[in-house]
Image 1 (tube, rainbow over the protein chains, first blue to last red):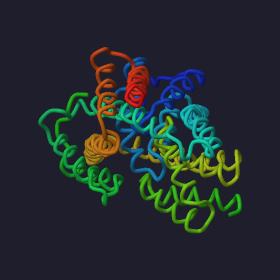
Image 2: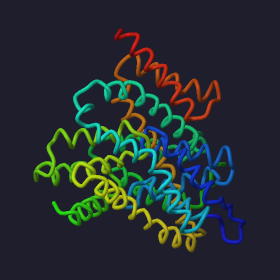
Image 3: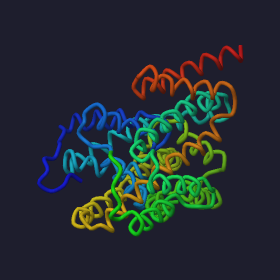
Length: 189
Length: 174
């Protein structure tokens, strides 16, 4: 989503694979993957601004697909064209896919044993840590008194309600923003 | 259920759920369990795998695909949930054309602010499920300490904290 005329960062397909494979190793679902992606692309390689990544994630949330799937396609396309999208998707999926299939093959042994309980008590809270880090890092630009912060707090409360769809919350945030945030000074990112 | 039916069900339900994991789960449970394609134990096991394995949560569909059609089913399920992601490309193309409009800038700002709120809501929901005892709390805080205080990478922080938790769990059960 670089502005037209702005130089666009590219990565080799091997580099795209490496970045997304590492991201795909994160626990904590899509937000864990996003955290690793932010670390790789924004903090370490500096080829994508924070603002662009969170905008892509926000757009991904309102797409009729998995959010991180849309993000991988968008970032992969930005960094390596169509082939970049395929490499990004394959690399991001591979670690989880292999684990899921291997554990499915082991269904007979694992289904009623303690292994999943151990994973629940150790990896799940660690993944929660990754999700919190990811939220803090990506949300940092709006953590000061502003309408953006009010939007974030309201969305957090609404999204925590079990009966409200997250896609609707985000879409409502966008529609309200079109009226209430247009022309407002944007927080520094 | 025939192979094309499996692919079609996953593809259409994924689109219908609009990225809402709970809605997708409900639709799939209705189609696969109530129609007798798999039993509830298998379905719940597959879903649990999505939570305890790396990557996106919806990768549990690979497990469902594998249970029904082996490797072919697992691969087809994964392809079926990834393909709709390409819809983002035309959307971004349109966004490029209108991004200078003030109302579009406001829309994206509202979208982004709401997304940040959603991230914390997700963290709260996971926290309610995950932080159920002393060991999970120690693992969670250790992850934050390793990343923020010891300045380790996220993967190192996560794996390191999980190892601490595993050691504690073994010690407490011994």
